[in-house]
Length: 132
Image 1 (cartoon, helix red, strand yellow):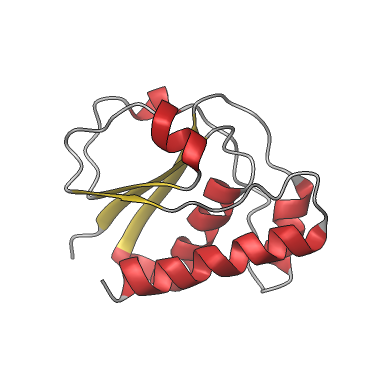
Image 2: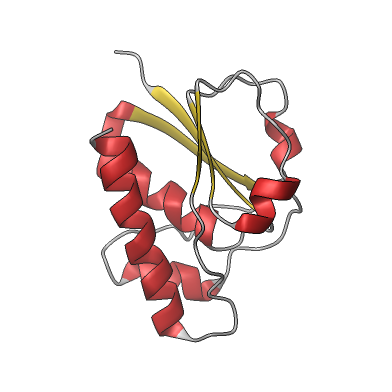
């Protein structure tokens, strides 16, 4: 069985792209090979880990990575999860499909903002990757 390779991109790879990676890995099972990265390497925000734990998904072992670690690799789908990433992320010309999801940055806005980002990502993953 061939799995679609998906890359989620954000600026710091600290929350939105990390949550998207965890969600698709959990929801998509063996259908997808999922990765995430950022323009800069940062750290996985504890608030992102907690918001995912609330829905039974453990992303605590995920690590922040720079997008250039994937340079030259082929992806079926590349998704930018913030407006800044859409403008600044490296291009992946071999991607069969590119998507842009404008998810508001939850950093510094409290737990509810992380939950809102998580839920918005889940809805988009369901509509555009699982069903699409």
